[in-house]
Structures are given as structure tokens and as C-alpha cells.
Image 1 (cartoon, rainbow, N blue to C red):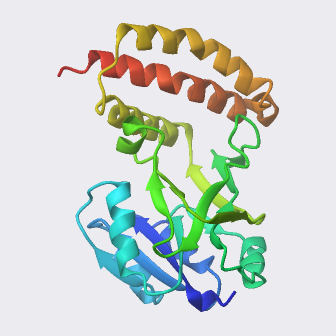
Image 2 (image 1 turned 180 degrees about the vertical axis):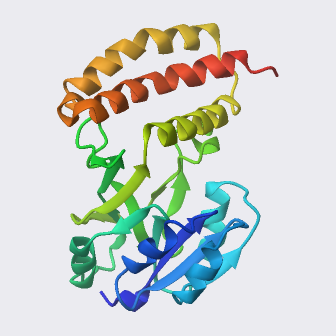
Length: 252
């Protein structure tokens, strides 16, 4: 596949510490579109200096931003990427060797997630396979439910065949425990604000929490990643219970 047939779409807001490394990781010859949500730092100037196309729009959610950015893409293929993600050399080489069939509308790609500097292989964090590359106009956004959508947890699905690539994207998702806590609060607040919880949902979420934590720690081998994996496993198990608690408390 010719890299020039791909546009890497990167959503940004105050990402001056990430954007240069992100864009540097892209295949040579590929297009880059930085869709910026009114950053107040040097994100846009850095991206422009690296020959990326830059567009600016007020933030209206992940789903809206991705849809609006796609309308600006002028290549056959779209690749969605976050500023804190990097395309690995293995994935670059794999993309270059592709000869896509007309029956293939999209490709799913594994994502290696890092927490506090460590790659988390357990706790259901790997391979975290997602559709990231698709033919423009041949994939649509979806979400598990309205709550997940409100927190920006959207994914792509294609009507035609979705093939798999093996080279991963690296995701430097949480630089520290404090960073994780800030994002945990933001995501749970967003999900809780999007629905009204019942007492039954609240009780069920807390009853399931210790079972899910044990499953992530043992069956999904989170404990093998040391304290990082243990922290992620317990926090992931807590997440639905915290959402239900906040949703129950939120006035309507």
C-alpha cells in the first residue's frame, strides 16, 4: 500500500508534549491531519512545522470531531490516531506491504497500552484490538451504550470485511497514577452524567466488582504485571461501580 493513500487523523487539545513524537512515527509519505480543539499551547504550530494539515474547531465530543475530521480527508484510507499514540516500525512495514482486496473495508490493529511507564499485558489491556484504518466513507462509529459514547468511548465498524494487522500501535495512556486518577474521574463523570442509575444497578455493580477484580487479576493475568497490573485490574473493576454511584447521586 502506498502511504500517500492514507491520512492519519489526530485529534488534539493542548498536546504540545506529544504531537511531534506522534507525527514522527507515521510512515514516510503518509498524509497527516491534526484536528485541533482550540489548543492554547504550541500544538498547532508544531504540527504545521512538521507539514501536517491543521484544522481547528470547538470541542463537541470525540464522535463529532472524528466525523468532522473525516470530511476533510482527501485520501482513500483514514487512520485514526491519538496524540499519545505512536505507530510502531513493525506496523509501518506491515502497512507498506499490504495489497488490500476490494472486499476489505477496514483493518483492526492491536494497541499496546502503557501505565506509569510499563506495558500492561494482562487485565484485558492487551491486545486491545480496534479498527483504526478504514476506507473513507466505508466505516461508521458505534458505542456500547449512550454512557460510553458520552465519555468518548467510540469505535468503528465496517459493513465489508475487516482484516487484521499484527503490528501494534503504542499507547502512552497514563504517565502516572495521578494521571490515571484524573482521567478516571473525567470519564466516570461523563458516563454518570449521561444516564440515571437505579438502586438495582448500583447494588449489582458493587456486587460484581470484587468478582471482576479477581478475574482480571488471575484469569486475565493482571497480577503478572506487578503493582501496575494490580492497580489497573482493581481500578478497571471499580469503574462501573463508580459510574453507578455517581449516576445515582447526580441530581436530575
